[in-house]
Amino acid sequence: MTKPRILIIEDEKLIRWSLRQRFEDEGYIVVEAATGLLGLEKIETTVFDLVMLDNKLPGMSGLDVLRHVRAADEDIVILMMTAYSNVEDAVEAMRLGAFDYIRKPFKVDALMLTVAKALETTRLKREVRDFRAQMQRQYGFDRILGQCPPMKRLFEMIRDVADSGASTIFLRGESGTGKDLVAKAIHYNSDRANRPFMNITCTALSETLLETELFGHERGAFTDAHQQKKGLLELADNGTVFLDEVGDMPPALQAKLLRFLEEKTFRRVGGVKDIEVDVRIIAATNRDIESFVAAGDFREDLYYRLNIIPIQLPPLRERGDDIRIIAEYYVDLFAKEFRRGPRQMSDEAVNKLTSHYWPGNVRELRNTIERAVLFCKTDVVGTDDLVVGGSPHVKLLNLTHIPAEGVSLQEIEENLVRRALAQTNNNQTKAAKLLHLSRDQLRYRMERYGLL
Image (cartoon, rainbow, N blue to C red; front, side):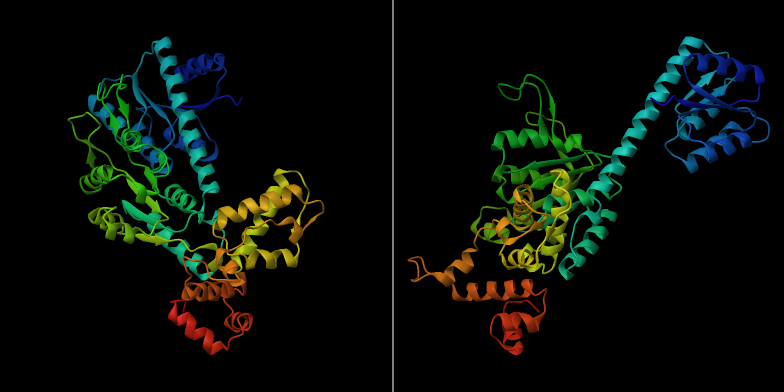
């Protein structure tokens, strides 16, 4: 374990010596500076866990040094020292971000306790910083794979949203398109990244449990409420709450969520006091929410409140060559995970993947590649290694009779056009050839289905 490193900025040599002796006895590494200017030079070249800073220094005062240090590094922990009782200086030091303000002569035991607390603060700050860096690497925009035009537009939009002060974002897309990944990318690339990211699936809990998870409850609010519980909205103050499958939220909770979005306040279950928090809400659904609104199953006012910044995630079948890019990424990932050595896909395997409808989108593709790499016996993933489900739209072409419930010819045609474009990476000439159409005939159908 690395020993804590402490910088002592103090003009009195005897005090520096005595502090050095005590700190080195505790196993700390100590660096000394007799002036504020020398101290700043040390800070520029060395990372310190704690700075002991005297207020009265020759030339530059301790407060001036503190201002320079805080401007350069807001996370550095500083203990101010003084032999004079000056309330104004103490207040100013704390305002500028000093951890504490201690008077000379020191009571050694009390000083060491304060130093230990300051070093613990440094450790926690670095853990938070490292965690944020890890999350930004894990959920950076570059971790969302895709080069097709719809994905490029998506990247641009979520970058703008992450940097904005938008408090409500609505993610729309089929199951498996990566709404949770986009939500985390928005959070961990925003100024809320140091605060919590809380997520909950609105279909996973009963109405009562969902309400207490979101809003919390007071002691005695119901039979098993033996103690107060804070909800996700309260725990995520200054952070983000991700409401997945919000379209399935019960009507009573829809009303409470609407009140929170409009007033930024809520009450715990059984509570009488309003609690105010600053939380970004990212809601998501794979439902046709407009039909839910029309049927009266989802509040119209909540829909409009959520839909201020709608972000549509494209289905995988409309992403052209992204299917190959994502598949190759997962082939490399699972080859390393399963210790299989380098793997690649045959051209026939790629064609099989790009021809599939992918109703489960990226999630389905990931599962398909994981299984293929696990059971592949050679260094090339072939068509026999890929187990993909059939598309219901393709199966319709092979039926010898029309089912009793009927079929939509227009839907079949639209999906075939979409699949042909996806398979050819939006090359209209090649897509038209696959469908035995002229390019003009294909463009007519693309315009008809809003694909131009």
